[in-house]
Length: 168
Image (cartoon, rainbow, N blue to C red; front, side, top):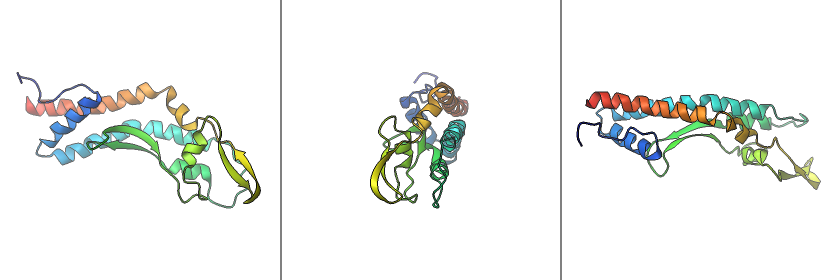
C-alpha cells in the first residue's frame, strides 16, 4: 500500500467490515469498537423514537385488563448494531413480545399492510380478524431513511478518520 490508510474509507458494507478489521488491529480496539457501536446506535435513536411514538398513536379500545399492547411493543423497539460475524450493520428493530397475552409477534402483526391477525372475541368463539395500525413501523422511516443512513455513515467516517490520523 502506497501511503494510504490500511483500510477502505468508504461507508459500504465492505467499508464497515474493513473498518472493523482496522479497529481490531489497534491496541485499544475493544474500546474503539464499543465507541463505534455506541455512536451508530445514537445515530439511529431518533428513528426508534419516531417508531415508538407511531405505535403509541395507534387507537385502542382500552377495555383489556392486561398490560398495554402498544406500550409493550414500544418498549421492544431499539437500535441494534453488530460489528462482525454473519451480519454487520446498524438497524432499528422491533423485538418480539412473548409475555404480552401470548402475542409474541405483535410488532410484525400490527405492522401488516393486509390481513391483520385472528383472535377470539373475549377469549371465546367466534373468531375475528383484528387490524393494527398498518405500516406504523415502516412508515416511521420512509421520509427520514436518508438522514439516518447519513448519520450512521458519519459515525463510521469519524472513526475511520481517527484511525487514519493514528496511522498517518
